[in-house]
Image 1 (tube, rainbow, N blue to C red):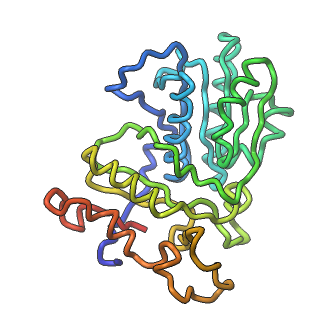
Image 2: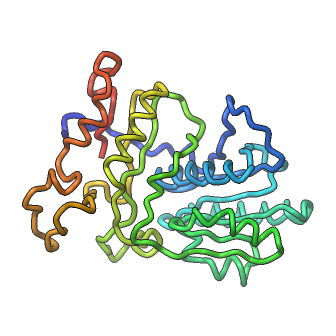
Image 3: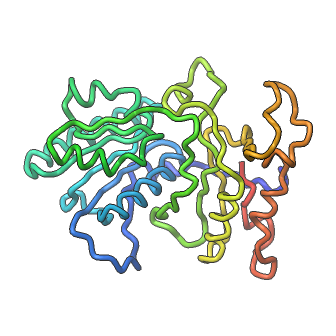
Length: 287
């Protein structure tokens, strides 16, 4: 499998990138949302989940912040520079909100969980604060904020993977796409906030991953990168399989546990060999 891994460098030019509306979207929207994303690729993938949820609620994407009714920043707590940039952007949005009273401003992601009190009570920069495991509650939180209340949900989950939500791809090139396969981290490194802002590890079921990869392939995509805070810890156990082994012990039969072997990964890239490029061009097994 290591022979298939391609080096991936995080594109710093994408920091602060705004979600782009779908060029072929036939729907007409009366309300617009604007999302800027910072940090790791998981945040950009989460913005695609948020966009899917908001579009179902009648919000259309825009890259023009001046015409937005709803502004979100998907935030990062890993690097100080990212936090400083986000605070500056929130101050800019606060000035914009002073001119457009009905506009709502919200913070998503890791900073939301860690700095909710400062954003809402001390600095009074935002109307909505939503942690990375609470995006399903966005419709209710937006409605609450529209009613004049400060809306907050930063609860972490041991189950949420958003497996049933089809992401709306950000500014897609139609060739490469990211697919989230797990969330959270159990490593508890002393220098890292991820377990506290993203929660504990949980893996998405293999069938939903394969389905999403298959759907992408049918749409013409040729490369899939699998995402997670700790992808090499991926372990999905189907409800009908045996209990997880004690920590540190190997599964007696990993292939029946769901996906400790690579069979499912191979399946996700073997939909139609006549249309697939060579392995090096697919990137389906990128850790």
